[in-house]
Length: 437
Image (cartoon, rainbow, N blue to C red; front, side):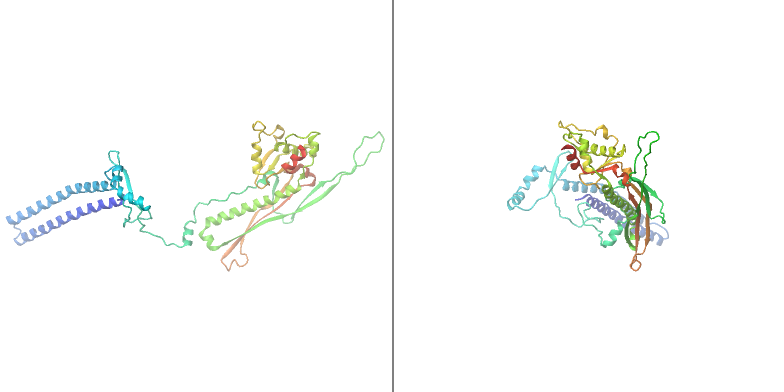
């Protein structure tokens, strides 16, 4: 018997006692009315017999109420004792198994069936056991299935799927992991105003000069020198996305609508990053100074740190001291480099010559690809901020919908002169071969 069933039974016992007391009081009240009626008939005179009958009825009612009250406590205690004894049992586990061994033997012989017992601890701290009936009868009113001993719920649901979804409209949102605008952080990024009269970027590249100065004698002819420039331009690019909403979605899921708009903005900017990275790699100068780095002797057992040092050396040599500020690799490559060991299984740290280079790992980079150099030489010009337009697209109005367009205009370029400042491997394996063979 469950705690809920036990409580219901005790409540019933208390109710029965109340009914018994009420019955006694009703009988007493009837006699009082009779006594009063006779007194009125006799001119408010009370006979000895009527008074004795009234007194006897009052005494009897009082004694009956006292007896019911006294018995009530005993009855409840008896019920509790019987319930607890029935539920907990009074015999040890071994005794109960012995008494039920025939039933258990039949189950074993037949290879199927079951017999259920309940083990409890009695007031002395000993384990006792009794057979347990798992058959479920009608139980108390319950709000959910499985309440107490598993009674079926009094309240069920027949909500349609749309209602159930709308119930969860304000639930917590767990978002997908997103990359960051990491390329913007590495490059020279400028956020400019949106100038509709200048849909392009322009810059001069200095070309190789004609002639050079020379050591001349007094009165000698001085050599001519001509400096040359080339005017270059880059037209803008646009990254855009279209997101549609029904009016009902906007009403029912306002939180999700706001979340979608925010994520769409982030995804558009991240897509700009993803589009620019291949442009940087394409513009970078391929590693081509393996022989010079060897200096007549190969690099023995070239590792990943040696590769980055060799590429940084090419940047420094070609640019007369440009600072290589980043080595960009895949995420996994960055962590693998962090656990590089020597032949004695001791961890190797990057050599001091690489102290000024930040190791940047990102999943947008291919597994073995590597870029080393001064990435601030690559220019990203964001033409205005992210533009968000809300309106109707096609048949949106007729279909009770609306659309949101997100656009980002931008330029990305590097001067031909500055391409020497960024070197691509294109991968670690290629550079290891160039410096180690």
